[in-house]
Length: 282
Image (cartoon, rainbow, N blue to C red; front, side, top):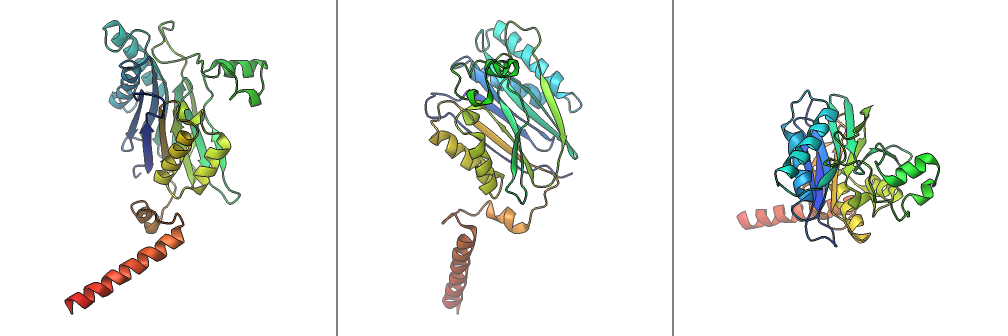
């Protein structure tokens, strides 16, 4: 099958001096990931890069769970050698797509969402479950869902790549079958902490393509405060059949923000240039 269409974007945010996120995009292998490093300058970015590079160098037949365990051991080994820093770590969410099937594996609170566009406006589904303290509180019934995003300890995670207390990490995974008009979005918590799911769904609904989607989501995260590094990837279902004009629209700058208005303006411009060329050459 043809490589899947995707778009990726990353930004250090408005409060951080450096970007500790890393991401991998290998459409020819059907493999993507977002890794969110922790540990400070010259540590978090080292850990997330090790996760990314371990995935990039893995054998095609290796299970995602095995690869993420390997990245955990690689981060621990690097810290012992003085590469990066002791205590560095990373969360990760990875997507592998094979034919019509996909698998997602994760450690920590980096997330994967499934966006399904339909006549009713579309549906956003969170595919991952955070490895976090507040998620444990929710599962135990100590808090309810309305308290998840406002709890003072919402950023405490219970699992991460490179955790020195763990010989192996808990890698969770979920699988699915692609349908038409679906996107999978991978993101670090720089997006999910700043933008509510309802707003994410609205922006995905309004986006004409994956490039526009990641751009709009990034703008929303920065408007929301941009307190952390932000990384977003949106990957399109292999079953989606796109028209030539939709491909072309990705490379044409937007003027008014309205597709039909922009099409009219570009048409008038093109006709004017043709008439001018004819007048000059005649």
